[in-house]
Length: 492
Image (cartoon, rainbow, N blue to C red; front, side, top):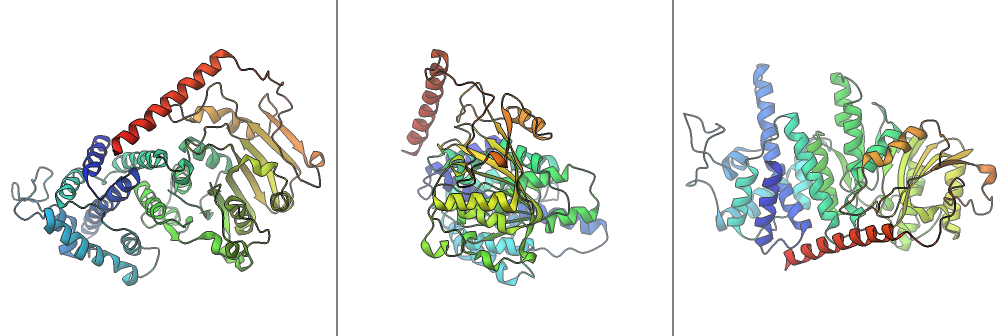
């Protein structure tokens, strides 16, 4: 049901003059979804209060509640809250009246929560933040009415409903990343995130951080991992909700999507801040600012201005290299990290990269490097590795694993968890295999700290590829080209 509803919403937004891309579809669907989610949350809280004999004070004033402005219902069998109750068309706003209410009354009202909330870790503050960053782009009040009617059919009352919602929302994020923009900017493949979290193995009570949070995939997966790790006490549940997950995000849309994604996964008031992480001077980071775990896929290929570079001991315009310095600094002693970065970081000979590699190897134990095949990040077009390290002791040995698959990865043939199963198993004991090997720091050149991925167990292959491999790659490229062309035609 959820999946078809999303498709129908996209079809409506595609016709609206204010929504021109998949990014707009996600953004506009998000704020309406959030208000429906909030209505269900309030109903749950009211029911809980009633069961304990308490009275519940709603977060949202009556005239701005979903059941008043968005979906007033006709009383059916004496109740307007019945599942079968129909929309009261006479009192339901539509057209210009609906647009006027949303743009000039609803949004200004919701924005005020940012200043009136008791603290930043409350749902009230997040309401204010979300609606301070967003605006309604839907230009037709009739299209908006259709979208509201569809979203009202969705429910977020049970765990199963929230679980389905979170998966479909992530599918939308993935599609947004594939819609011609940098695929890695918004979406890291879920099987890769799951694997990184398994290897880092965070524990309840540890503070987990992503300074390039994007759509919050790492924090969502870590939340699911910890929630399923054991039967949680009420105190542990509160720790997971309020004192475990922290993130920073520079871009407005990614920031909103990250908050929404975490809320749909079950974190009511995510500790995500809208800020440029790299604007923070590393010299100002104190012990109280540090985290036990870092999980991240910082943006690669970006360039930072000279004034931002001044915040770092090793100055470079490469965004990912600045983030890596930030992550090393912000980890507590004994802290653990899993960070995605371009594979060229391991071998580049420029002074900045060499200095950062030296710092990483001397201040942290870089125990594992996962070498990923091209195509892991659909649309990103770069080769990447995952660095797993612990802060506090210098590196003695680095265990490498090269993920060699018998197929080409792409949009129609993405990475899956089975692809990474051998890596997870072998990594536990740093075992040698045809795809894995260890390198002692005594073998690493002391002038360049070159960590190039060179598998000693793999025989040199002929430069000429087999016809079957060439045909498979051609087929994959043809399928991706056809999908891109269809996406372009939809926008015309």
